[in-house]
Length: 209
Ligand SMILES: C[S@@+](CC[C@H](N)C(=O)[O-])C[C@H]1O[C@@H](n2cnc3c(N)ncnc32)[C@H](O)[C@@H]1O
Image (cartoon, rainbow, N blue to C red; front, side, top):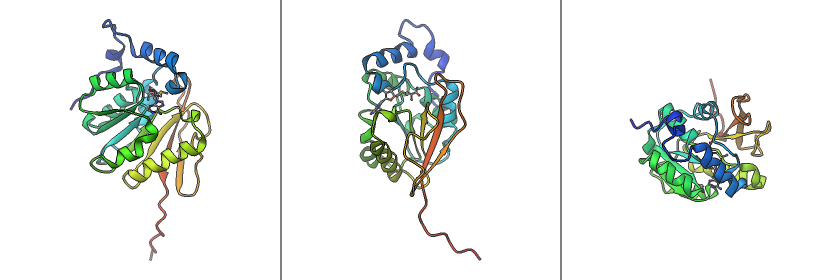
């Protein structure tokens, strides 16, 4: 199975800018889009990837993969790269992701247009994993993105997102949408929390005898 590079390989000096340098440049170019000046730590990436079940069939959508810190953790968790759909706005990051995971589908577009894109895939998504700077968008846009992605995904699939704040970046829980926040992941600059959202199952409970 293709596993992609290790973080050490990513950071090694091969004459090309390191991921940290690329991130810093992206942040200088467009701080609101980059949302961070360096990639997530391996610990935060593991905490994100740990919330998906790799045995669930279907594509795994990553929104805002950046240089691939979480992508790498997803692959290590057992997601075959051919299942990955990486939706990224920064063209330099897209090029890097295509090089690192040639079997993944890398789409250079606005992640807020992901729900219609998800309809075109072969089968509903097993999970959506996002590293987007959600707070730069109004709460209604954030909520719509999560709900619409989950409606295109497999029943019970998670939408996973990290935030540097205590509160959920999406106005949830609310009727129809469950939300679960993890403990703080301290080993990251800045410490972060991982939120998992799922559509609430609205079918009436089966009568039990
Ligand atoms: C905070 S960084 C997270 C990167 C990576 N997931 C990580 O954890 O290291 C946010 C990423 O989302 C991308 N991004 C921000 N807004 C986006 C949008 N609307 N559509 C697609 N990508 C976006 C940025 O270019 C950047 O790569």
